[in-house]
Length: 101
Image (cartoon, rainbow, N blue to C red):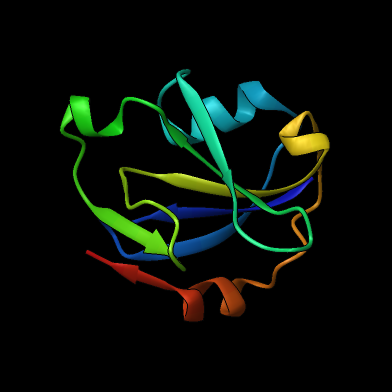
C-alpha cells in the first residue's frame, strides 16, 4: 500500500510502501501505535502512542490533530483504521496542511 512517512527531525515527507501494521511500526520505530483520522477520505496518521513520554525529537501537526513527536505515517483506511489501503491524500496536500513545531 502507498503511504507517506513524515520525519519531523529531517523535515521530510516521502512516499513509502507498507504491507501492514508491522511495516508501520518499523518505519515509525515503535510498536505502540495510535492513529487519528486526518480527512474525509479515510486517511489516518499513525504515530507512537508514547511519543511524548519517550522524548523523541522533532514535532509536527496536521490540521488541528494533536501534535506528534517523532515520525508519523499517513495511510488510507476503512473501518476506523482496521483495514488499511493506499493513502488517498497527495504528498503536496499533506505538506500544505502540516507544520513543524
